[in-house]
Amino acid sequence: MFNSHSQKNPLSYEGTYACPICRCGQISSLTLMEALGCDVCHHIFTINLEKQSLKMADREPALMWHWTGKTWKGEHLGNLELSWIYWIIALSFVLFPPSLIGLSALIFPPISGSVWSWFPLAWTILSFLVHLLILLWLMAEAYQFPVLLFIRTQCQRLVNPRRGNS
Ligand SMILES: [Zn+2]
Image (cartoon, rainbow, N blue to C red):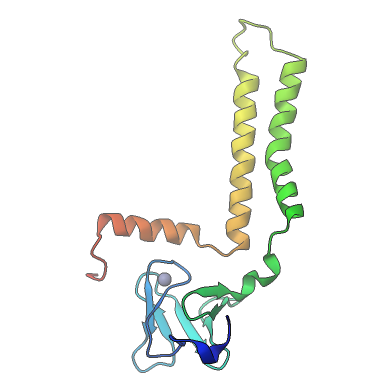
């Protein structure tokens, strides 16, 4: 699968590839430079022809991708393969606090008809959403997924579907 000799579309400075950062731009070689640039997020990349890998040049620690002939495979994700134990931790992180709050509200129910009787339910939902948000943010950080950049480029696409006029 990663054998560079059997690739039909090898990684080279002459080619054009989908941007692995914003996932909607195209990266192609910059004039007079041994580097590639994205037309949407404007990040700079360098190529290792021998290893068929792409390196993000303007960021530390540098991100690396391996070119499979069709898509990018994040080298930095290698040791981040999520095993089931992480999923259990993540799930309990999201579900445990709200269920604790919900349970305590069940055991000690608020006085019915009181102004604050809605509070335990709202608090349970809020705590669930907050923990879910923290988890999603952590995952975005771990996978180096540029959330803000992605949202921005998607917005630009909505406003101006014919990209490249800028
Ligand atoms: Zn890009």
